Amino acid sequence: MSLTKIEGRDPRSGRSMSVTMEAGVVTEIEEGKCESDLYLSTGFVDLQVNGYAGFDLNAKGILADTVVGLVEAMLAKGVTCFLPTLITAPEEEIRSRLKVIADARSSHAKVGACIPFVHLEGPHISALDGYRGAHPADAIRPPSIAEFDRWQEASGGIVGMVTLSPHFSDSVEYIEALVKRGIHVAIGHTHASPEQISRAVDAGAGVSTHLGNGIAQEIPRHRNPIWRQLADDRLTATFIADGHHLPQDVLKVMLRVKGIAHSVLVSDSVGLAGMPAGSYTTAVGGEVELQPDGRLCMRGSDLLAGATASLAQCIGNVVRATGISLEDALTMVTVNPGRFAGGRGQLSRGLRADLVRFRWSDEVVIKDVWLAGEQVHAAGS
Image 1: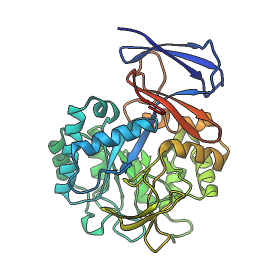
Image 2: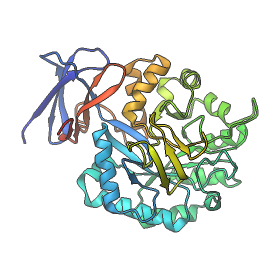
Image 3: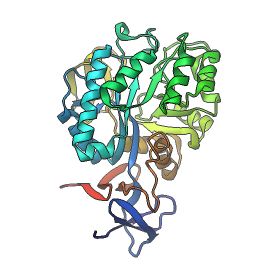
């Protein structure tokens, strides 16, 4: 088996770094011999991807080709690990989509390498306007262990994260049951009381899904779902740093409160991400308008209908908006989300050689990408 060696700048020190790969794993990390304007990092990890580049996981009748195309689109943006995210839908539709993803994962090597499991955002969320976002109200329902087990039976156990609202009466029992099965439970799209949120965390919930979004425009000043989630250090919060979902000052304050160690950036990208500006009709949201700056709105209004920035764009946005370092921004898209994806996002000897090189001024420009030691993308190729 031949050795592959690549060089780039260490984002932590700025010094030249050389990484040697063999048989899909990193075998050596040492000081590089030549200076480069390319930074070298482990591949990005995205815990919330609904779609990208026209590939929509929540559309009706998705095929394995939808999943394969999405994986290729993610790799081109430096994402070497992501969680396909399915939103609220009737049970039969969820099971069908899970099976398609599971089949694609087992029959395509790149899909299997990129996707550790699926994230179910719903259907056990708040049905109230504002809190549920674009999720269909008529498909929202209370948590059910029996339904969860049917999801897993249909897909060979591919569900690994579930976002729910803990306002339901059986939430604690449901969370405890999922945690015992090794499932990550996240809190999101919720109007739950502070006490209900704390009970959910006591039961094992460990993530806040896109904190600051999936909530009503007007909420009580003090007794609302945001403060308790910000204050609880047991919760890692995910943030959509696309420049549209969270105002600059809100993102800056939330990151200061949670701290880098308990913060993760997600794209929460939808199928229209990476597409030209214009008017579209979507499975989720209906008639929408994609503006030139990437803001996706319900047609005729300023209400957001999804996120369209890549995780690479979110890195640049969060650095510009908050003044944090590139190193900290990369931590929030590699090591931190990797804790919830089987330990991905780490650059260390003996671990998978998922790597990305990029140029940096105040934004990330992807140059090339390796997945398990194989080069899978090169800019301009």
